Structure formats: structure tokens, C-alpha cells
Length: 213
Image (cartoon, rainbow, N blue to C red; front, side, top):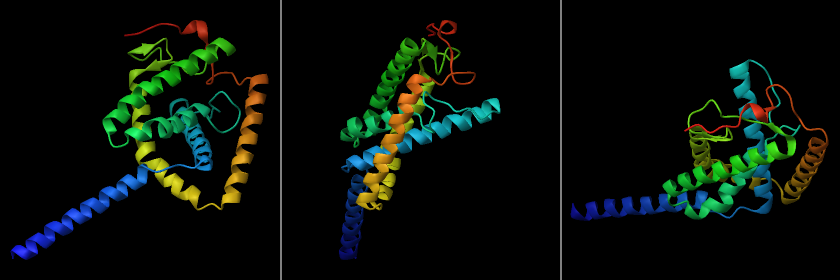
């Protein structure tokens, strides 16, 4: 009886150890450069789709959101890659990841919004009607969503997508990255010459520059 109990306890400890090793192997992994590039474009495209569908739901209209003409929102890709590069070292401390992602998302979104206003003279998003916003560029509730999203990326999405990327032959993966980078570069240049603006995309800076706390 005692021997059987010891065996069951030992088996339980072994399974727990194996499970913990498996979980650690899932998110605590080294991402290749090609995987990072593909993840950047994946996150950018998912962010674009999210905002397009959000405006379909809210406004009942299809609007090509973002600062570029292609089907991607670079700020989501940058945020996703920054999560993997900067926060993976804290992966065993989810609360730290959430807090750092919260602060980091705020810095990224605020500085990006400020830069766009300075160089293009318009706002591409505005949270002036939300409580606890700073100059309409960031607000607490949206940053909370971004922080949750960062945790989902680190612990779930990135490992799963990396497994898929690893199944692509190396040559094909390199070619795909080159094609995407080329298209993205062309889009950036074109968008710099012909900025995308208009209803549902941009608004006058003078209309929204205030703090709400």
C-alpha cells in the first residue's frame, strides 16, 4: 500500500515536472530572424483586421485603417516584436510581463501618435472621450487591452505561430520575408508621398488636444 502511494506520488511529480518543462519550452524559446519578421507582419495584419472589423461593427462601414495603404498596421507588429524581444526574459513572472507591457504600450502608442501629429498634422486615433486619457493619444482601458494582448502573444500566439513558421522550408521562408519587406518598404515610401487621410482615418489635431483625469 505504502509502496503504491510512493509510486503514485513519484509519477505525479514526474508529470508535473514534464508539464512545466513543456510549458517553459513553449514560450521560453529562441526565435529566428525570419520568424521575427514573419511574426511582425502577422501581428501587423491581425491588428489591421481587428480595427477594420471594429469599425464595421461600430460605423457599419469598411475603412482601410492605419497610416499606410497596405493591409497592415505597423504599430501592432512593432508592439508584438518588442514583446518577444524585451519581455521574454520575464516570462516566468506574468504580472511583471503585464505591467511592463502596459507601460511599454503606453510609451509606444503615445510617441507614435505624437510623431504622426508633428509630421502629418493629423490624428490617426483619439481617446479624448475616454476617461483617464493623455492628450487623446493613450487611455488606461485600451492600454489594459494591449497588455493582455502582449501576454497572449508571449505565452500563446508567438509559440504557436513559430511552430508553423518552422514548417516552412528555409529558402521559402527567406523569399517570403524578402517579398514582404519589399512590399512594405514600397508602401512606406508611397504613404510618405501620398499620406492616407480622410473620414474614419484621420481627424484635425486642433479638435483634440486635452488631458482628462
